[in-house]
Length: 362
Image (spheres, rainbow, N blue to C red):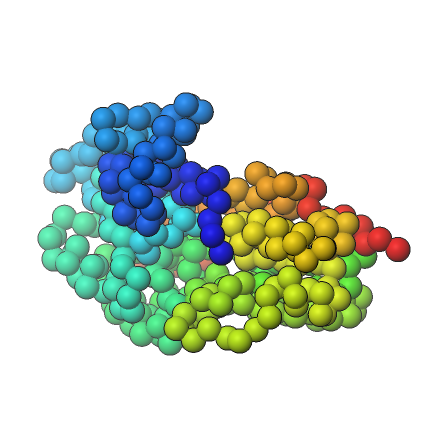
């Protein structure tokens, strides 16, 4: 689905806030748009007072401390490894950055390319330099098999690390490491509970299937619907043809709007704000009004409030996830990696009710 201008500008802002300063040409390459489009987005955000514009660069309004010198007091260096072009994790990185800078710790960001196994050579190279004392990491893990592959080498690292928005599976070699993750099961349950309370009985979840978050949402939706006898039918589909673990294999399925009509669904939970905004338009084109005929809940809440109508959304506290992950890592750096039990922190999202959900018409 084509991204809206508001969604793209939100991604621009998230990248700039995560890094402090970014060249416009780099933004254009990362967001896969023209330099002219990136420049217009930066100018618009600057007029709104959300960032500062310099000669060919965009700067965050959040003050950036000069990085401390490794080896001096407070000169710890922490590496952040996250997938490139991942808007969701940009806010997580921003939260971690704020907490680490407040503690006087130098941060080095390493975006991982969208290829299998990209994180390990990056981490190996980073640690070979000898300056990095801690690691915050969110592996891509497009499949469960990819997660299994990464478990052993990550668990064997000899520096403190904290997983961000990733949770070790039962029996994983990583179960002895710290992690901070949104409780996506709780978030999906909030969405289903809200729709059921409004009288919706035939529900659809449209989600990706190529990340730990996506897999958690799909499992949680099935569980939440099964636990409520009021739900007469629950359907799980891909949010887009390329949203599976293997984007080269696009399933031959009807459009989501057609599926809603076919199944008689009156409530949809959509993984991702941009896809949810596009769904509202597609439903309207099919003669289905939101929320009169179908209620829509977005899962993310980055730009959901900018929709017409504004979208009800599950809002993960992404910056808080990053802040808490940084706090755990700082404790490990201060006390030693082997001191204390490993901790798994689950951060509860909230449901923000707006105009895209309503009681079922009778």
